[in-house]
Length: 143
Image 1: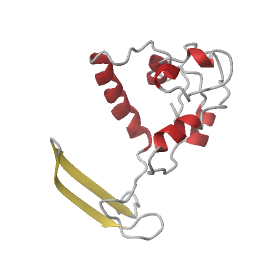
Image 2: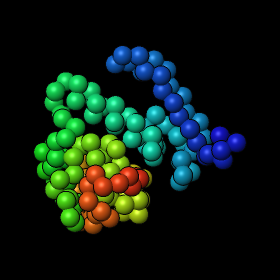
Image 3: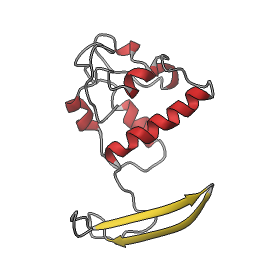
Image 4: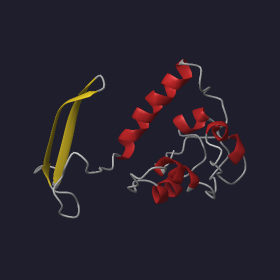
């Protein structure tokens, strides 16, 4: 924590469905003590974890990589040419057409209340695409 100038930290070791060990240190950004319930922004670490979960659904046959995102998240309504054609693969490959700027405006915001994921997806409702899906790689914190 000293080296990274982080005010607080937490970890948990999970075995199966059980938390085998956990520990917290320091304070959050508002000065409150870090507890096992303190929310942390995970930033881009969420992408590989989400990709792994999506690929498990693909292996189970519940999701196909070339499914339109709207098939699974009907509220996902990016605007612009081809917004309706954004696929699961486009999001995983960062080729959705959602720009880095648009992604940053919508990412890394704490929302641990029920429905938070849906609210974040809905926030992409009017996002103008910077290009057609699949055209080129454009990193986006929101995708």
